[in-house]
Amino acid sequence: MLNAKIFEELSAKLSAAANSSPAKDIEKNMRALLAQGFAKLDLVTREEFDVQTQVLVRTREKLAALEASVAELEAQRSNATL
Image (tube, one colour):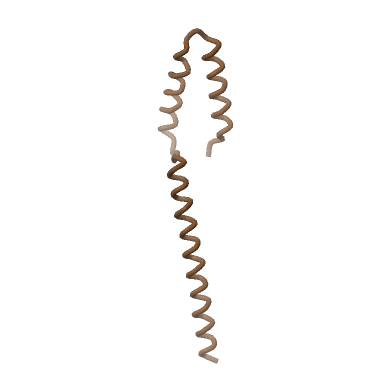
């Protein structure tokens, strides 16, 4: 994935360039250009990432419970065959 620090540095450089130049709309144009470029990348929003993180946590919990159930059933089966 892309490094967030690179984008922060780029944004800071663009802001510095916009503040030192008489054309204040350069920053708006560059932001629009960057947003258009980001739209073409395969990125997810923070909200989508957080939702998928929660789904993964629940899935891991269910998997752990199923593994425990299987282990218990295997133990019962081995005790029954003895």
